[in-house]
Image 1: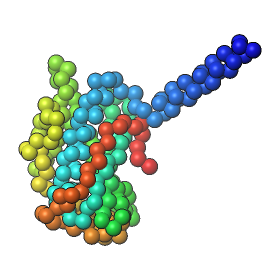
Image 2: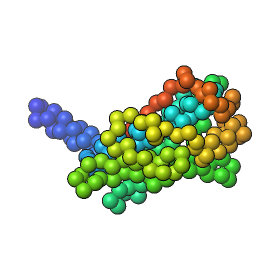
Image 3: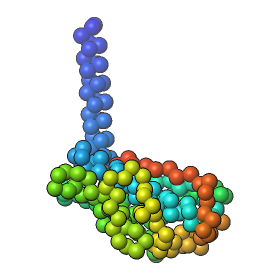
Image 4: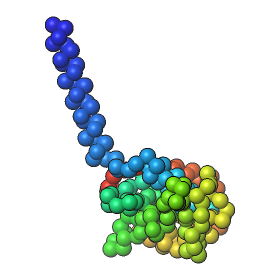
Length: 197
């Protein structure tokens, strides 16, 4: 009888561990530990840059929440990756930047277009963000977004938010230097394989 229970428990354990392995293989990107750390650090700074810009330049915002980091095109030295911010207005509506609006598909925020991630010759992190003038700002050694990397202008973000307001997905969100000082920013550095649905 005891042998039967040990066999049953072993089979259950094998099924659960196999399921966990398959789930991770399907949903988690296959990046090394140093690359994973670099992506998480870099995208956390990018999220702070985007979230700060929206919070400081738009009124009527309750919360800005970021998607996981979507990693696509695995296999090269550095995989392509991007995030998408979701804006919640004061009326309970929410809209995600980068979602298609009619026939217009705005850009997502990620590698090449907004951030450069790499390792230098000594294996140290290289993290560079684009500023408002499309010049790279080195933030490799920063824990939080430095003043020199704060955006004063973000045309594609402004255009995307304007379209979301025109489309009725957001209400009462207006570009204004008063901003939304009480808005919450929810960062997300979880890595997911594939793109947003």
